[in-house]
Image (tube, rainbow, N blue to C red; front, side, top):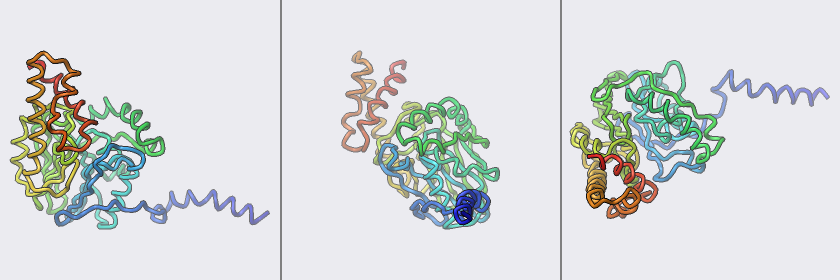
Length: 315
């Protein structure tokens, strides 16, 4: 009887032990990040749609270590991925994490935020990001529960940034003898895109303003994206971490494929509009000559064509 009672007490006590002494709890396996410049690490996500098997880990995310602190750039597509990113950071440095920078609103970049939800950490983003998350957050949670499953989605918290960068402006964050230059962009991939430029290593985290392998996704303005391409290319980076695809790619060469795709899609859409085609025809025909150059083309190109058609038909 006593032995059985002792076992029940132990079973009750163990979960509280790990709450009180979290260092003894088993941390998740670290995300396999790669150091692409001194003190700058990135994880290359899968070229895939988010699902339960990949735990939403389809976007490129990373972190930068200064003399005093760490900044995280995007947290991934689930809290599990965010926790693995945190484990990777802690495997490399014990310096405090001061900032989590979200490059835009999409779930594959922000669903891991809860892994970093602490009073000592400031969330940073485009001035439009809080509004975007407020408008779409509940929809994302509901829609992606069906995509990545209840077990992954129930941990997700929609956490808006409190340190905001105004469109067309720059903000400088000091990590200790290491300065990050954040720039908020006009409507392009979304209407809340932010880039992060590490001056020390001349490395640019582009968020989804740059896609490689994965076909670009238009959720903002195709005209705005093309119009700002030269300004994006003018950032004095040597290498880039795109939102999707090969990390550490030379800059600005990384923009070439995306620019060609968006230019061709726009040209096709304008031609179809001039002929009096409707949006369903545009979804089937526009941009098709680019299909061989991109993965996930059939998943996203019809949506891009539909969004572009709606924008361009009112020119």
